[in-house]
Length: 104
Image (tube, rainbow, N blue to C red):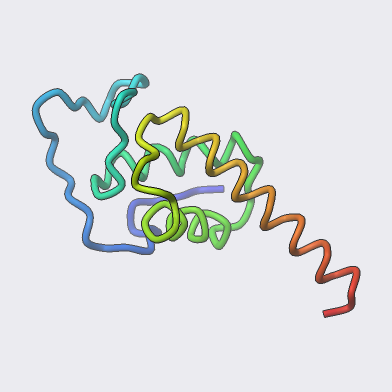
């Protein structure tokens, strides 16, 4: 699946690199993930395509909304954010399956 910056749900991200940040490195801000910096969110969502084997842009939009609206502010590290996104995605899949089994 191709995912472009223009596919992001939120349009108010900052795209400027701040001191200590490097959007081209794989070790992106290990100690602090900033959910308002576009390149960090975009990079993370792009990573999640492979990590979760996603094929629908709607799934990425759900993850993006979760990052901004629901993920606790206390979750900072990139690895912790990835773990939370996996948990969220798994819960969504289980809920979809339950709805299908109920016939809703």
